[in-house]
Image (cartoon, rainbow, N blue to C red; front, top):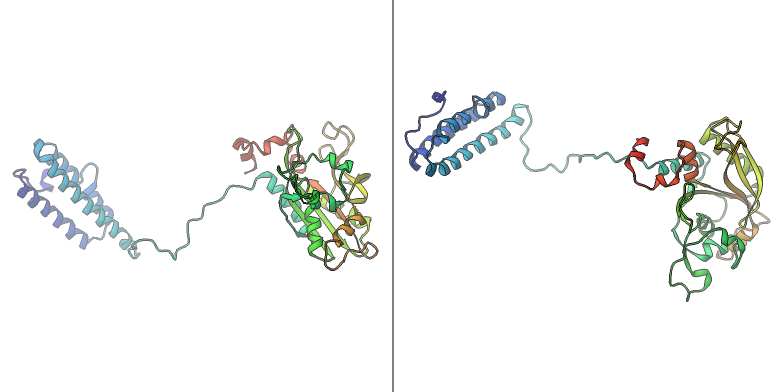
Length: 364
């Protein structure tokens, strides 16, 4: 098959230059009249019968040691010429203009992000329910002052209810006034205070976010968890409005067959207060291990906003707007992890924070 390549009489520099020049001229001539890039590629770069393969077999393998380097240099230059001819010929053969560099007007490559974390997905589902009821979303800082986290919410200093929220305080705050000392917020309720100070009624807000408490981690507790709270303030807001709102929300989250019931409770910032239970979604209220054979699962807390909270808000406003004689409101709060665990049948809250891809991939 050596008839497809020139005969190499010797390995001196002039002979090598002349022989490779003949081949380069052939490549240039074929490139100028190229109509079939694939045939051109096979003719020159084919693994079995390509001309470069023949050159390698006929010239390189039989070359004396001192001639292999100059021959190899010219061989590589010829191969680069052929590859360059192919690169420029393929777009033209396809009817496309040859592009030089990067066209910055073209859209970028879209990298598909991962799926939402199951906690984030559940939080978005909860917020979406209240968006459909006309609520807007409010957020606030995770590092709060004692005033917003406790005092304005009717937790006066030394109030025993403060002990129920094991607070993580920021170090080095002893020299500050008590109400200005910083801590990691124990609930998203401070956003309610911030929003009321900034805006007059009517208000309808839902507040998703991360909170922190000094809880020992176990199957149902974590020092970091998430809440969704809500606040509605207007004229003539009653406890019936609260019950109707939460009953609708629970049916939207768990199905229309779910029932709700309210039990008296205590929270410093609401009066009256209630715990909300839903009929067990696992046994349809018949009683099972998950609901402790009661047929009901306690899910969230709620109540009518305490007048003391309105008073604390008005004290911070330039123009008082929260007179309990004219306006009223309700508030509620629920744990996102608890709802996500119920929705997906998860028994250990720590799995949400483990970063174990085997667990997270189940939600893809």
